[in-house]
Image 1 (cartoon, rainbow, N blue to C red):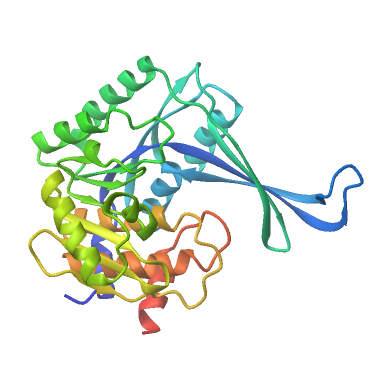
Image 2: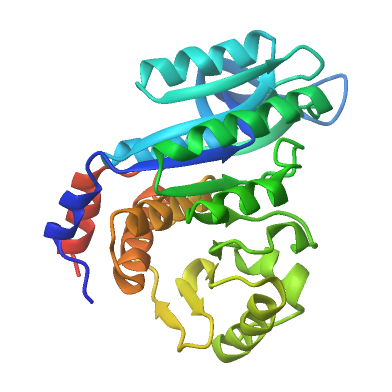
Length: 318
């Protein structure tokens, strides 16, 4: 069915459990007018700094930005960045149930930007310990009674190592699990409802497929192998392809008018797909919502979100 503005009203207050690796995105912005005399590298004169929530925190913010009610579970370091993230989540009124691990560093991505061009990114990160992971799994068990859908944002930082157990626990309670995957081995995602890789990520697992029919054929094989119900492959300028087990795929052309920055677009897609399904939209409506929201987000710099008003405006431009 076609997505209509009336469908969006059902999103308000719909709860989604978000699990995954939270990050703090820092931006240092300024002008570059000379090359360093110490080495052949540009010198940036920093004039402005900014911080944003990244990773699973950005996924949760995407859910909240359209009126959904996210519950965020994550493990962060007991450090300045971890507590900054907690404060930012509280400011957004997001229900965050963070576990502070004294043995890890919160993931921080520092980007240096000049004239809207990224010059350099520096990453600071480490993995959580076993005790923190066990505490995270227990928090997941305790939170399942509050939600209809669970969403896992796997950034490969170690916070989702118990994902197989999480999927099993959710399935036992009839809760669908949506996953933004990472890496070349998807075996840990067995039994999930849907995975949402981009094409490059999908090719790591399924081989060098490119044409829509070939992508669907590879997705069908992967879904049978891992007992998945759906696989949504994002295709950059070609839009999205929703492959459904033993059913015809659904292709959506891109809604982006101008691509400015694809950072965080995957966060938006998984957030909208899980939220749409929790709000009882059908597959076609869910992918349309995700596509419109992603089109809004890639027109902005850095990790960003789309509001309901922006999505409605995008729908009206068709």
